[in-house]
Image 1 (cartoon, each protein chain N blue to C red):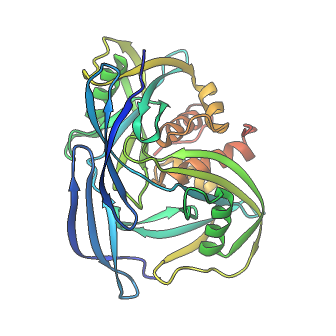
Image 2: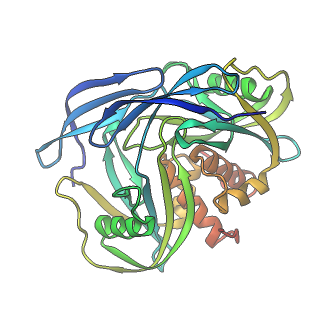
Length: 184
Length: 184
């Protein structure tokens, strides 16, 4: 079966501070046309910082869209589509936690919600951590705490960590380090 | 540290077919105000349909925002914020694959990208499958195939499945069924 949609035209809807919304008209496989609204995003990185004692540096941060505090791994947007993800990962890790990693292992890509946004988050495992100073933006508010990786796996399984990048990075890091599953 | 932001006002930016965009003004913990753009979403469900032979019903579907075909578990939006997630899960499973499940197990919530959208996907494991007929919308195009759960875990680990709900559901279903990790 042919599944591909062909782009006929694109209309700019909104270009704000963090959201860039467009509406494309596409040709469906059955020849009809349809609208496709979505957000354009520069991409992002998220880092699971694993200390030598198998604890993870986790971040608590308020997310206004959900009106609640999230428990997440350090993460952030790439500066633009040209920034190498590993450069962004090291920057976000340092800014949010003060940590600098001797080794990075790629945990794979994560497309957050492909029907609505083209955002791809590159996930990394960071090890060999040493600590310098946290470097938050003036208007950025978060706290850092250390939690054993196995406790985080149990929290994900019990539904106590909802953030998608954090769930995936925790489970992949655990299966890689403890389950013998190879990454690419 | 106080992390909470207080909503001062909300401005409607765009209300389209699938995207509802607003920009709130919030009071930060340091007393300054800041804009918060995000999308409002009714919520969604995703179902990992596990056959008795430990294969999973997977779906291939074109996602225009990414301009490529995704390999995903069956999923869809809730009709509105009042629809019980399990009702939506059974509907999407039946429509996309033709399967009807005797047993559902809740695999937990997934907040796809909390900085940008309030979307929450409820994940389910569906077992005891029997088959009726697929019931796609006229303008919906997808194909279904069966893949062993363990092969899917290996694909996720190698970075070959990028969709966030699909990665999380596969790894959680595996750790629940094979790893002895309890769900809530």
